[in-house]
Length: 223
Image 1 (cartoon, rainbow, N blue to C red):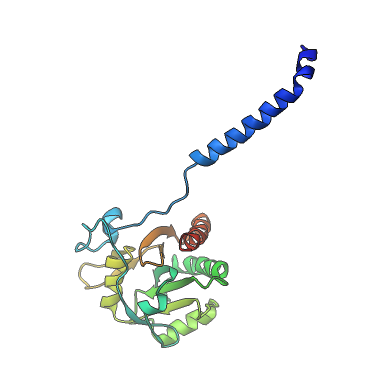
Image 2: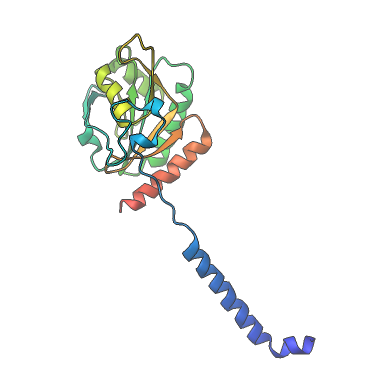
């Protein structure tokens, strides 16, 4: 038997190499390629979506907006045109999940620091409290890069509409108070075509790692 294997060792080695290559090729072909879903209102928890758009199943995009950032500059959709960005909702006096979310968004800021395709956008859900000076102090405290990350305030009705009708990320607050909002831990990933591509728990390290990986994937998809 040993003599047989020695005699045909070249044949067996060749077949082994061919088999390895074939298995590798089959794995490459059959392995599912990574994709990111495109979210529409009908795909999301109804608690996070305004009733007027809950039926929408396709072609959903982020609406135009006009808000004011930590430097007193008016920020519109034009500032994010053609950009991939991460949006969230917060308030500066929040003592529960906001500090953790902000800390984690700072980590995302570091990861995208040298990527001109990516930005961040944080909306205050208490704009009556979070004035421009308050947002500026918050930005300085957390080392926000003004070129990459806008903290915005403005008309509460507009922010409410964006939260519930565009980003699909904020729950209703007290029914007795019009436009009252309860922000969630969600970070929302938006692609260069203004479509929602992912939701991530802003308090969890593993979700932040996934968010950063998905941003990199979208950047390549956009090439």
